[in-house]
Length: 373
Image (tube, rainbow, N blue to C red; front, side):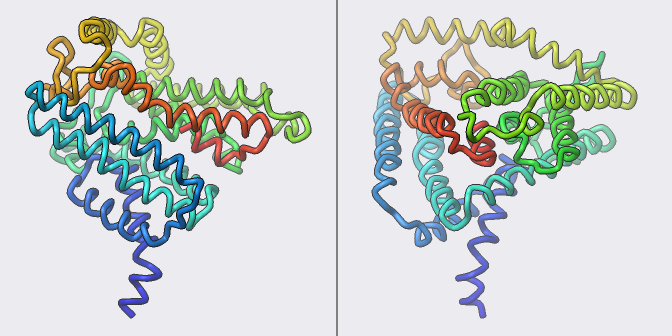
């Protein structure tokens, strides 16, 4: 019986637990998450049917691994802390390999529709965790929410709201996917309620990146739809047209009135703050960091200074001063222009391939959701 359980039940249970913890409770119980990742990846290996089409994926992974390993050595020679070397190895080499194995097996064992629906359904516990976080923090203090975030904080004043939760990072991808492909949710009522709740999550996050994900998903939907061949276009009421926009605005106003009335959080004002921050390059802090990165990149002639080397003018994490929030300039600072291009190529390849499929009308709603995320 135990042998049968291991063969038939252990893999799906391990996979579900990994997805739930990684999406709903990211960066919580890290040791348990790492163990789940290793176990699930190990169980995934024998379920993968390797073929010639995996050659491109292998080349991409090996290319990025070579770049990472080389610049880890460069960083080490420039006195990068050993902690930075080990973290880089884990974040850029080992973890991507394990997740690649998990993803390959998952997409072969289950179709893209099932996987997309799982991720979409996990948005509900993600949203619930935000409510629990704010309520527990407000009533019982930071110790009550240590499961979600160490050194937790919630800032609500003068209509502004911000909570430092890791789950917002998961919602960034979900929001982009939902606003790019809202039809993944069949029920229109559920669709617009969830989109309204996502707007509320954006407004309480204090993160411009979440607003950018929302806006990007929406714009991709509006821009991408006209390029589908006319023969496979759906009826007007199936697209995100005038009526859909009107319903969404109505939901947004209801959410705004609810938060203003019960929590003194001005959703619309917060959204406008995000627009202002993004239009100004992310605010004064981000602009200063970007300028510092640019000067450092020019000073290094865009060759790269190596992984684990901190930039004194840009310290977003005082304990780990080699971690940065501005990913693209940080990558160019670490691995130079050529290394950054090699890092970008897999994403560009996927986008080009998806664009060609969209032009042929071959992308379904669930694939668009995954792409938008």
